[in-house]
Image (cartoon, rainbow, N blue to C red):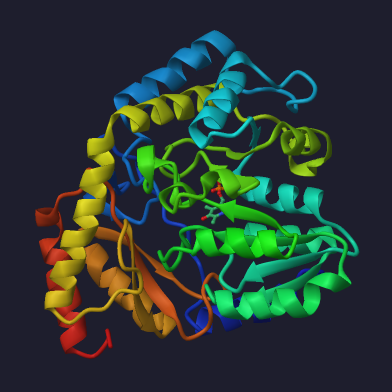
Length: 395
Ligand SMILES: *Cc1c(COP(=O)(O)O)cnc(C)c1O
């Protein structure tokens, strides 16, 4: 019999040969924050999670999720427009809007679907989207789905974006500028204040994806736009519940008008089941803790400063100046994976990020810090990285 899927075999072989094959690891979970346990019971320091504030297993967050599950059951059982909404969803949307200082907010099943569905709802044929070259896949996929024209600008290059807007904007009906605030794989920040001005000057909408910044940066953890003092001038704010908020789901915050449009036209919301009420309740408890626990955020940012200083002492460069995301570019995917495995032997889980997640030739170890990790915990890691530097694996 002919195997209709035989075309996959050479592709899979090619990826394996080039060191690009992905194999999901399984973990047995963890009770101690900042760590993760292998199925064999080995406890590793987790530098490959986006749970920057260690909220995912904070006892108060877990308790809030459990209480909501007892009260509302597990699944939401329908889309938000039918019977999927429970009180925790409504309370979370209200509290997110207050946190973001917008009129309203709306929840999505994930940050990914929020990104895709929002872009596809605000632009279409005859419109144009100006997109940073390193934007997250959900933003790229949203643009593709929208059928708007895409103009990609070089990473963080405001000068070039300004020229492109000047040259191209007038050919289109609506225009959207879209960027991450903290770039997930590079950890650097976009100049949101400049983007706000450009959007204003060229009659464009601005959408900022704060997935990696919410809870971590800015006053009360309100993100990079707030840190740069321009939060209220960003009309479309995208966030996730799955990173510093330790839960699952995505959200968009903005004006009543925007949220009304998304509620009616964002297909990733209309045609998808609401997140479990317990996930909403847990996220809201995390949001509450973040607002009152400035110390946790400060500890995380301080760890970022101290860790970078230790790396710099050994001549190791990172491509982000601050914050929990500390990428170390190796270049070759196989060497990246090999160094990641060596660190695993020393007791750390780190992500070996390779194409297509990052551009070819820029494979990297992406170390992500969490508030519960201590600098002492990282000494053997720093030692291993210093050895890799000495042997030329790290340039
Ligand atoms: C992680 C991430 C998302 C997706 O969020 P999920 O809730 O995990 O689906 C969207 N945008 C950016 C920039 C991200 O880093």
